[in-house]
Image (tube, rainbow, N blue to C red; front, side, top):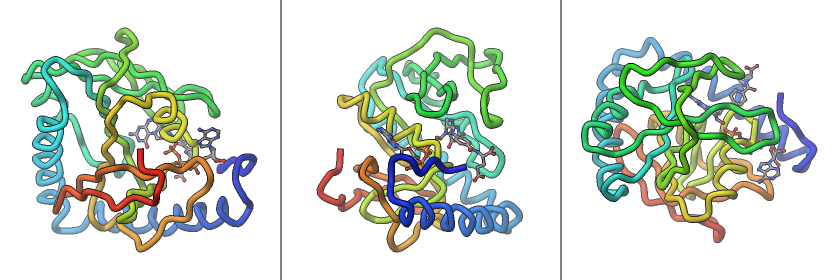
Length: 203
Ligand SMILES: Nc1nc2c(c(=O)[nH]1)N(C=O)[C@@H](CNc1ccc(C(=O)N[C@@H](CCC(=O)O)C(=O)O)cc1)CN2
Ligand SMILES: Nc1ncnc2c1ncn2[C@@H]1O[C@H](COP(=O)(O)OP(=O)(O)OP(=O)(O)O)[C@@H](O)[C@H]1O
């Protein structure tokens, strides 16, 4: 359910309609012949982009995938082996920012809100935040599940570098935006590392 308390009725409803369209596209992609190749290519591009973005020993926030999302565990293992610190979000109650917890290979995962999973490790403040998305555009605007979690979280971490990630089929011409949506500076897909053109409020 989308909370419409903080944005106009028309924006909230346009976002919800787009979520429905993107859910169908994602379901079709789940069984598409190119899925496995696209997944591997996205993982490689993510590792390359994050190695370039993160300094030695820095903390990178990734996500534990929800059904239909790309598998990022190989990315987590590769960056951990580089000596980077990996954190995953714990889904807090709606209206709050996410809490990031330290992940280590083989660590126990705890079931969280909305089907998400998080490690039980200590809280970590990430230097780089990888942002999951349902849809994106070339400005760097994104659509998520409607919790507003990443908008709130990024607003509270002004020094963190953010990068979105997803598959190229998730690109649309123009994401409907509200007052709290801020453009991502970059988005990685299985095809490219997009330097987004922004909307005048890019973080
Ligand atoms: N893998 C992953 N982890 C993540 C996110 C994500 O997008 N992907 N999040 C990104 O913010 C946060 C969790 N955000 C969520 C916010 C709302 C709903 C939710 O309302 N789900 C509805 C149905 C949503 C739909 O399909 O339209 C539900 O479960 O009923 C789910 C996750 C943190 N962890
Ligand atoms: N920094 C913020 N402060 C207050 N309200 C916010 C903030 N960021 C987002 N919101 C509100 O949260 C609600 C959900 O936002 P939105 O639809 O953009 O979520 P989303 O980006 O799809 O979700 P998520 O970030 O969890 O993937 C909207 O009503 C929005 O105005």
